[in-house]
Image 1 (cartoon, helix red, strand yellow):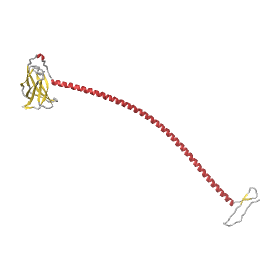
Image 2 (image 1 turned 90 degrees about the vertical axis):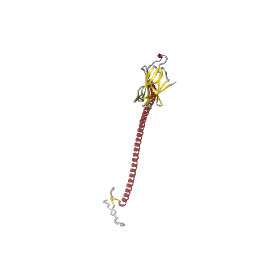
Image 3 (image 1 turned 60 degrees about the vertical axis):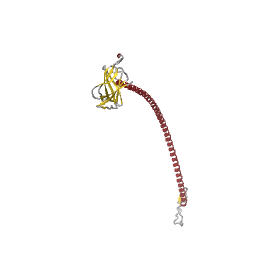
Image 4 (image 1 turned 45 degrees about the vertical axis):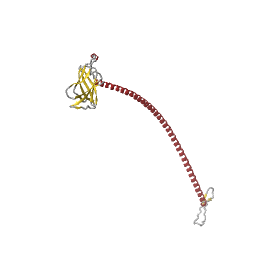
Length: 286
């Protein structure tokens, strides 16, 4: 049920009249296929461009609707609002860069809208901005997406916060266990030091006792050695004394001097070896 009117429209020039006709109140059935021309040549619509139809209705209200681009042709839908008022409507095509950095508008053309035989009161004319509606809807969609993202982010944050709380709890428990282990280590170290001190004292006492025993043994050995030396000296003195006694016997003779308790010495002169001399004895006075 689509009625498509194809036209060529220069980007520059005067308004083109009577190019399109339509019926008041029609809906979703009237389309205008516009081929944009520039000095007689087809204009190439940029791929990133957005195309709009600006329609000024007979009752001075307007429509600002986004159009589709198919095979480098602009498809303008004459919506129910665009055809709400009978009379002559004016329309031009607007091309915008997606960034709105550039805007290019075509020459205008007229749309003759024949009055409908239906009750005009049933048709209420108003401004229509489908492009704005789409933008608003896109904003709403974006807001809904953002809300969903926020909710997802909030949920993720809650999950992350719960994980962080668990990690913090584990960290606190680990720290407590570390502190307890450190206390136990210090207590064990104190015990070890005390035990080591006791061992060192025992070793010191043992060494001292051993030193005393060694000193006593050394003194005993020295005493034994001294006694042996004394015995040896005594034996040598006794031997010397015996020799002296023997010599005294061979050299000296006691001679009774006559009176009690008196002795005279008998001197024997052997002279030369193997000689015998006369022995003279002075016995003193009787």
